Amino acid sequence: MAKITYKDHQGNSKTIDVDNGLSVMEGAVQNEIPGIDADCGGAMACATCHVYVEENWFNKLPKVEEAEIDMIDMALEPKKNSRLSCQIIVSDELNGLVVTTPEKQS
Ligand code: FES
Image 1 (tube, rainbow, N blue to C red):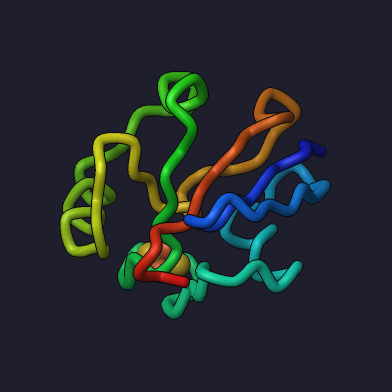
Image 2 (tube, rainbow, N blue to C red):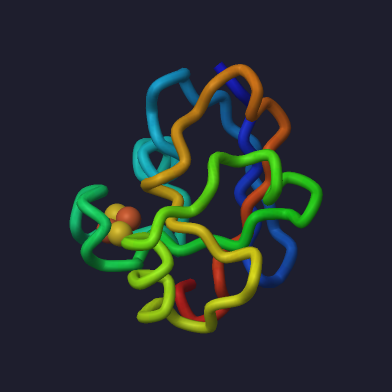
């Protein structure tokens, strides 16, 4: 289990215990975090689960695969620390992870 903090573009945040094996997206959807719609249910086909990962966490995550990069290109306001939250699988090592939803997704 890991504590994941979800922030919106205004700095409002909510920290949630998310079980290992779930994605950061699933943790958000199960807890009704606004701004993460996850229209495709995690199939990497919608980019509505797009988040910005705090800089100090970005390099600790598994590398971004090509298909995810392609989908991030279609997301709203992509940045160099963009990830699809459906592709980040929670483990104990992610305890303390902070992600922020883009302004246009809120
Ligand atoms: S939920 Fe659709 S790409 Fe992540």
